[in-house]
Structure formats: structure tokens, C-alpha cells
Length: 144
Image (cartoon, rainbow, N blue to C red; front, side, top):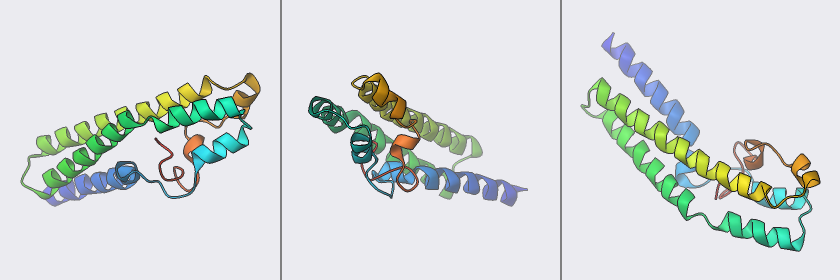
């Protein structure tokens, strides 16, 4: 039973890590969701400038990405080490919390960009998940 629990915990960890490691490293594979969005929506020059400012101000997202990387590392250390199951669960919960904060920061940027769009442009806007597409989640730096 103990080996089954270890295998299960490691499996959950591996899935979580693989699903989020691109965020923690700052890349997502694929190409340029932000640039495609700007092109697809046919933004005015003024809208482009506003969107670039929103997209370029990413200190909050970078801090959350760094916290997520640390939480990943802490979880990996706990899983590989002598931590109790409760300690491993606590590390996993901490990782989930920082992932949620990271996704919220990304979403807040999407909402901010939405605010500069016309109703017609909004109707063409992709869903939050789709805005970061270009491979699996979008181009490198699309979350910033």
C-alpha cells in the first residue's frame, strides 16, 4: 500500500509539474498569441500602444511565476525526501495556490486589454484559454 501511495503522489506531482512547468519557466511553446491577437483584432495605433503598455507591465506576473517555480521545487524536494504525507499535501496546496494567483494575474491582463476594445473587436476576441494558444498555451512570454 505504501508503494502505491508513493506512486500515486508522484504521478499527481508529475502531472502538475508537467502542466505548469512552462509557466514557471516563462515559456509555453508555440508562437506569439499576443502578437496574433493584436493582428487578428485589427487594433488602432492608440489601442496597440495601450495593449503594449498593459502587456509590458508584467512585474506582478513575473513575481508570481518565480513563486510558482519555488513552490514546484519545494514540492519536488518534499516528494523525494522524508516529508510526511501531510507535509507533501501542504506543499501541493501551496503550489495550487500560487498557480491560481498566477492564472488570475494573467486573466486580469486579459480583462484590461478587453477594456480597450470596441464591441466588434470583443466579439472576435478569443477566450482566456484561447488567447494563449499557439502550441499548447501560446507563445513564449504570452502570459506577461
